[in-house]
Length: 139
Image (cartoon, rainbow, N blue to C red; front, top):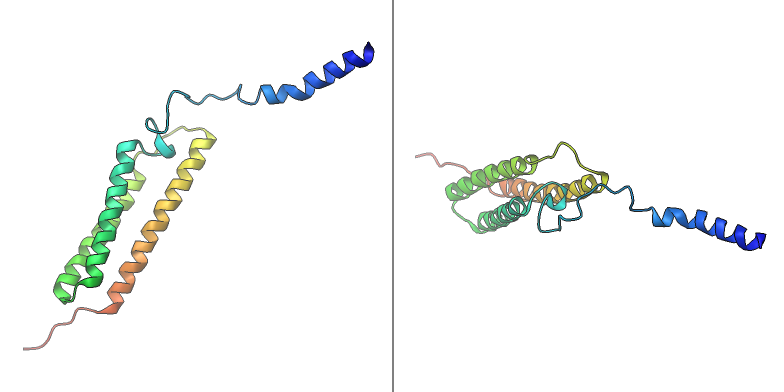
C-alpha cells in the first residue's frame, strides 16, 4: 500500500509541470495569425503594405538593370534609394511598448528577414551605381 501511495505521489509531482506548462500564459489566444499583432510587430495591413513595397523595389531594380539611357537610369536609381529609405521607415513604425517573449522573438525574426531583403536591395543598388556612372559630354 505504501508503495502504491508513493508511486502515485511521485507520479503526480513529476507530471505536475506538464499540466501547468501553459497555466502562466497571458497571451491573447483569441488573436489569430490574421489579426492583432501579426508576426509580433505589424498588423495584416501593414504587412501587406511592406510586401507590396518590397515588390515595387524589386521591379524598380529590374528596370534599373535593363535601362540603357544614363539619365533615366540615374533617375531610377534615385527613386530606388528613396524607396529603400521609405522601407526602413515603414519597418520602424508600429513598435509596441510591451510584448511577451514569443512575440518579441517573432518580431525579431520578421525584422531580420526584412533587413536581409533591404540589404540585398542596397547591394544591387551599389552594384548598379558602379556599373555605369553618369557622365556628360562636352559640347
